[in-house]
Image 1: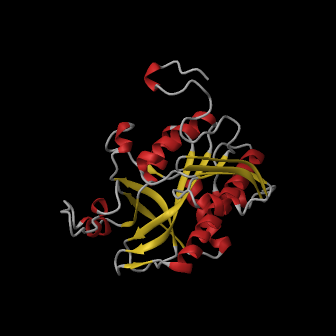
Image 2: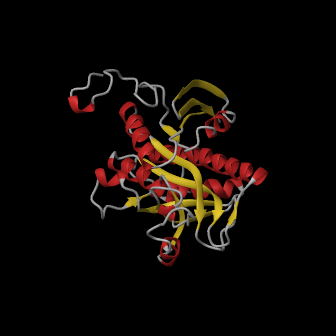
Image 3: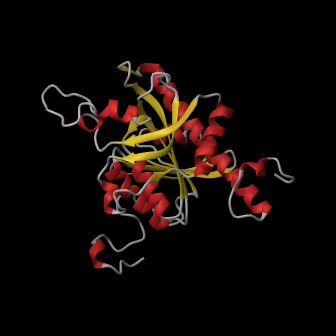
Amino acid sequence: MPNADPRLAVPDTSRQYHIDLAPGELADYILIPGDPDRIERIAARFDTIEVQRRHREFVSVTGTYRGHRISAVSTGIGTDNVEIVMGEILAITDHPTLVRVGSCGVLRDDIGLGELVVTTGAVRLDATTAYYVHEGYPAIADYRVVAAILEAGARHGTRVHPGITATAPGFYGPQGRPIPQLPIRFPGLADEMRRQGVVNFEMEASAVLVLAGLAGCRAGVVCTVFAQRVTGQFLEGEARGRGEDDCIDVGLEALLVLAEMDRQVREAGTTHWRPGLWSEPGA
């Protein structure tokens, strides 16, 4: 796959520079956790393993899960890392479906630690996406992915709260967390976001949604609540592991729901999925 544009300045190969994957090694349905250690937890759920790769913080696996070919690729932390991974995934796949499974801090006191939040759209506090779109461009989750995650949560018996996410470019100052040694410009940022109806803070959603949308791909984000920003509590110990497991299980189930949606669309001979396809003959 020659690089016709010299501005790329990367090795002249189809194997991607950072994720070290080549065409054919990724499935059409992909989980993208931030933490590379979550790939091992995802792989443990697979029935078979086809590809496993580790390069820098980017860890990947492709295999089968309940009869479906599924992949998972870690992004690391932040929208800058997501931009790298998304760009390289899109270079070697054809319109994949992507679900980020991550963690977040919640801004509502009625959402508990260990519960899940599915992003309907993201406030773009990051800088990365501004290199691709206008400042007013919205970061919107695909409606089918949101529906699939909500359905997956119900099947799994896990509370999933839909809402708007704020994607911050850092963990401390950019989320309004005070640091004793450093001044921060926006100490009231969490309160401002809460007043505007934002449900949670995290650090990757906006890039996932904007870049997938530009490429014409479906994408969504589901996160375990690790931090309760209203009460100051943080998820720790075994409860944290259970929360991560719930998020992974819901993410995997959501991919299976999306595969079922795709089958319904094909059999109905239509273009867009709609809820009525669940109950129509042949669905």
